[in-house]
Length: 88
Image 1 (cartoon, rainbow, N blue to C red):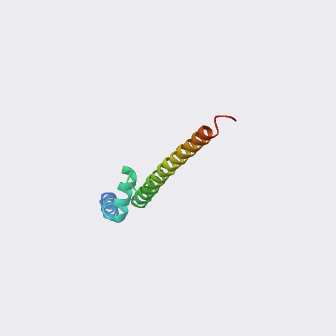
Image 2 (image 1 turned 30 degrees about the vertical axis):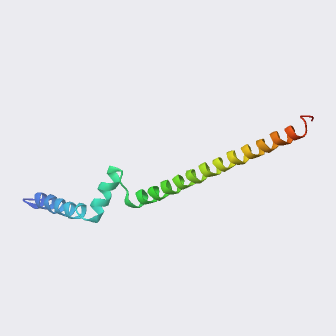
Image 3 (image 1 turned 135 degrees about the vertical axis):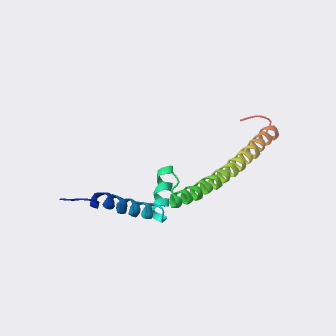
């Protein structure tokens, strides 16, 4: 089997290889993933949040326009009732 320094040397070289790999881009990506900071996914989520915010803004504008149109129609109905003498 193994005699002498082979086991400690093997462990040393495996540790050095692991350090080399984990300090590079792969290691940074792994660390970001473990910390919950995935780069591509984060950008996509930010873009989607921006789109949702824009849609919320548009829905608010549409609601305001609908409210305005309803008020105008209600006024027209009131005027028509007043001119007609209130008979239905």
